[in-house]
Length: 171
Image (cartoon, rainbow, N blue to C red; front, top):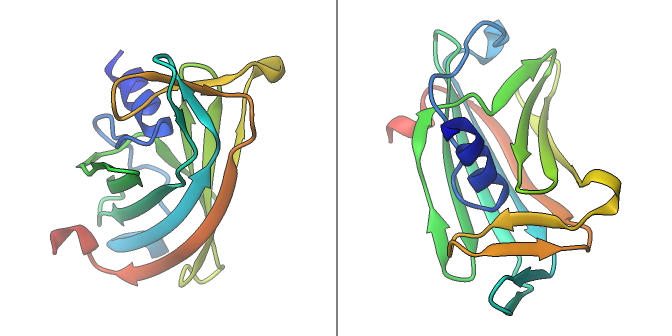
């Protein structure tokens, strides 16, 4: 239940981060490395109390892959006045070859953020896919605790992605 809640909150723009990250598949070149990624998402959200929000949501992630391959994430989100940040071992992200993939489940619908690394693991690019079952509305719990929904697509705009040696979360 805690993991599902963390994933749900992540998709809705609140910091994700369930417990005890898995280390087994981290590429050796990413050990003791930090990844900084920033992107915006935009859609028209309708709340269960009748409000509408069209503000873009800014996401800034600082990800540290420890020398043991454990993943720690600091996730800053801003949508209007909403801001959240946490650091914990993370199970949302996994490695597949030269990619780090995070899956975020909403109440209805899901998103998948992919961080694709260059072959030398010195740079990265971001992509996001989002969808729902059979065209159902996407539903999430917002930072305000209300249920939000949309039938519109999520517009994703990558801003930055960088890889640096060391632990950027230690600062």
